[in-house]
Length: 306
Ligand SMILES: [Fe+2]
Image (spheres, rainbow, N blue to C red):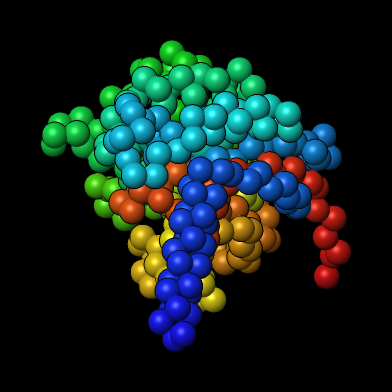
């Protein structure tokens, strides 16, 4: 009798694990959030940003046999259709578009091209995009021209004004870049857009663990990825590990807020939206951290004055 109970328990656990892996890896959710920014002018109240991250070329397989947990082929079209229905004004991808384990770049570009018919698409690099192929060129450099041809806007260390007082800036992933130089680069980028009249600054950056730097630069909203919501979570314990944060990481997914520590020009509060992302890497699957994208609606905050 005991034996039977053990077998039944193992069978039930295996069923739950397999089912959860399929759901978390092969299906996605889109959540909608309002984010209040104190510097946002009234005319931009209601601006909708589709935030995607960490695609990792996830649904672009040569064949189903290539990977144990091949993603459903309708994933890509369902995702594009779901985003289109929500009418975003812009689409942003906060890094790790590609992954050297899945070299079918052409298919990845097709998806980006599909997205750019919905709204302008802005991207920055993640650590995987900056990984070199055979020790030569990085995926980012290999795809740069093709992204531009596909009407995608690469924003590594550059900016675009969405309006005269609203700037979208991007910083490259810090892989292979000295931390001091990377921080200087970010500060310089912020100064340049402020000089040009930006009141509200939205940053695309792959790394959430550098949120303090974003707040120090009085960035209104940073859009990040990299943590994958742990990618594989433990029941009851939650996220066990995230790259560059280590065990039991602080930044896993959702909205975080810091007080601008420099108390300089810009907002009092700096926000970060951290996406769990779409794809997976290393383990090739997700567990209790379902693939997801977000629609963020910007709102003008009405703060009470002290
Ligand atoms: Fe990633």
